[in-house]
Amino acid sequence: METVPSTSFAKPAPGFYGNLSEDQNAKLQELKSVVIGIVPDPASAPKNARVYDEPMLTRFLRARSWDVNAALNMIKADVAWRKANKVDTILDEYYALFPRAKEISTYWPSVLHGSDKRGMVMYCERIAQVDPKSVFANVNRENLVSFHIWIMENGEKAIREGARKVGMGCDYGIVMIEDLTGLGWRHMHTGALNALKECLGIDTQYYPESLAGLYVINAPPIFSLFWKILKPFMDPNTVKKMGIFGCNDWRDGLKDVIDINSLPEGMGGKCVCKQDEASGKCLPVGGVFGAGVIDENAPVKVSVSARSHLEIEVVVNSSGSAIVWEFATDGYDIGFAVLHKREDKKSEVHSYSRVNAHPEPAQGRLLVETEGTYLLHFDNSFSTFRKKTVTYRVFVEEPGEIGAKAEELGLEKIVKEESPGKESEEERANKRNSGSVNQIEESSGAERKEEAEKEEGKKKKKKKRSSKRISSAADESV
Ligand SMILES: [Zn+2]
Image (cartoon, rainbow, N blue to C red; front, top):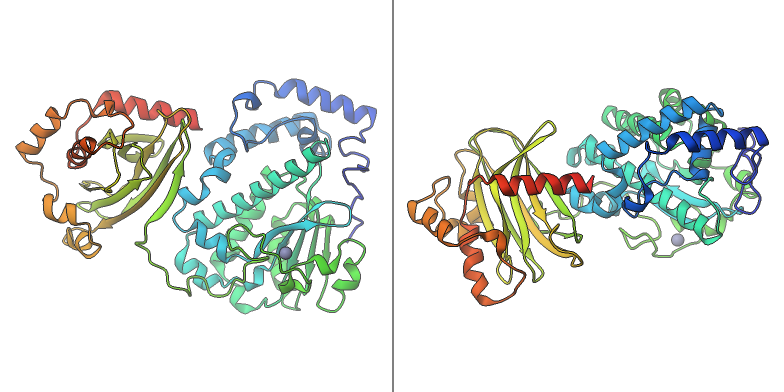
């Protein structure tokens, strides 16, 4: 382990923002002038978007050994990746976008916790308390990678907030303490290792200079095998900042860097705070994922910000299946449509309308002719200030079982009133008579209820106007 650069807010090390040589400063100014127009305008960016200010540009420059062109290319790739993966809004939308996100974050033994002796934000993790088999039985790799990006963005946010407090830029990283107690053969899991490699690649490419130190503690002998596999995927600069300790030497090795007592109790410290937002604990415990009672059909509560929308992904594996949904709002109407997603294109398959899903929830079923990815689209772009809370559940009925699951789950409106896939002349007439549903205003009046119910009985009617409206809302939110 090399010496970690002794940088802090108060005293940046050479090459860090606030302590640049003349040459480094000239390169920073050059990069600053060429990124204009390439990076998003902070004035119109989401509140947790990455800000490419001087301290951030310094991180990119340092990651590319002060080569302005190389740093610029890295930034271009970063901007594109963040846009494609909606990284700038992941902190606001994470729980809504990924069905089991809340469970993962409640389970995963990691927490942003206090700071080291220099004042750097600390991230504590006990990754060997994760049981890969149970995680992979429940969560796919894409969701795990998204969880990692969410953690990284939480870290970046903590860096920004810490820096803002002392009136400085965000050019310093996080100190990570990785406790490997419990690491064993069960962790030699191909899926887990592949996901880990992918995450390490993301960190190297898109989170330059984000670690001020990485200390592995309680590393058992088997760690050397893992290290051989993972080291090639790590940023060499990060490897230089690592310290690897066994179970007997880490306290002594880290006593000048951190206050050992301030670590979570489970990691050998004395802290029993409850600050981890997801779990309400100092540090989530881990163990076997999904060991508790998990009801896959339990309703999920999400919020849709004002001037925004939210899309819930539904994967249909066989043609002729039906998507069944139920949702309720907290007192105001919400725009709703079902879209079919093909590569980058989205087409409306259940037409857009504004639904008063209160006081009774709206329910619906849609027969789909092709398998693939569908999106429940909840739209609140028309509301200037009011955030909406939506409680929803959605599931797929396979061909041959249509109707059974809705009945089992008590979606009585669908069971009684709808014959799957068929739309009677009467229903079509009702729909026409109900007027332009897009004009339903925010109201909780009972007279709206009937209208909303009629509305809910609707199926597959294409409207060019509303489909345009959705795509423009989608563009705005990117
Ligand atoms: Zn604590």
